[in-house]
Amino acid sequence: MMKKNLHLKDFVESYCHQYFSEYCEKSTGLLNFGDDYQPLKADVAPITKDVREKKFKMAFFEDRNPTWVEGTELPCIGELRWSDLYRYVHHFPSKNTSESKYDSKNHYKSRPLHIASDSDSKVA
Image (cartoon, rainbow, N blue to C red; front, top):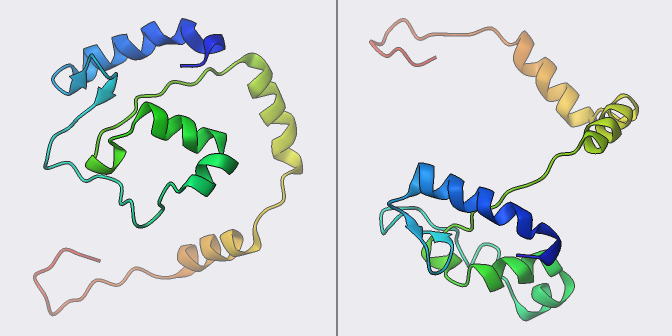
């Protein structure tokens, strides 16, 4: 954990202990949900040497969670300040709406729901 965020460490540990005590590995600080947990796929987005050199956060993640390929989770916490909310409120009105997102919303709103009558299925 970065020195400037050490004050958050107790919050993470408390959260993990309260909600995931049976999965929390105290020695590593990781959550291990066992073999039936679906891990991230290393071949989909591998963390290569090049990625580690260019992306500090990816190197940090792999340093803290070297067994991520096996499905262990790195519990994280974020700090939200009033200044963050203020910045968002002022940024939001000027944010452009994605054309594809807008079209997608309208397409599904105007499409009528159809339920097949020749089936016992309740799936729409």
